[in-house]
Image (cartoon, rainbow, N blue to C red; front, side):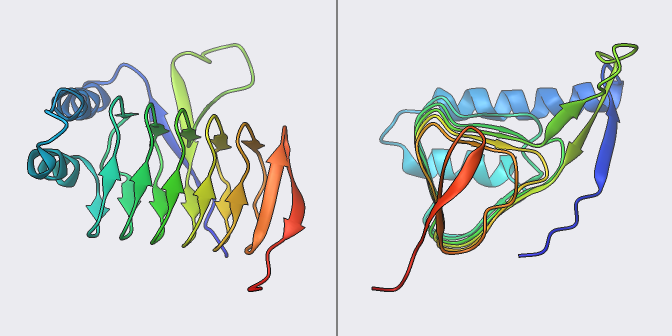
Length: 182
């Protein structure tokens, strides 16, 4: 899976970024305040928040994101409780993906040099393929691609690309096993 890993730069505190963030915060609050049985309202809010979604989306309570419109998910997407997606750059998630509870997907980063570290930042896109399962308490860091049919074991920190058809685990996540069709 190839990915374009160009950095997207942003300035904190600008009116434009503030307005985009407030838009997302309002939609996220409305989503998290929804009656759990009101699936139509929840789906309408996510469709308004995200850049694109397909059918069969399910996101549990206490979801958070930066902007929302940089998030694109395929069909049959599931995210567990307390999912956070920092989408200063695009996050593309394929079909039939499951994300466990307390997972963070972070495109955002900051300057290493201390001068102006808190005034500007950058984002590098993340791509998650089809049929991927991300276990609870994982962190997926900026610029990462996760290949089709892969599993990220619970508690893992993914700092590098994950090949298709593999199980990765650890901090930093490393390939434990290749998955076969058997």
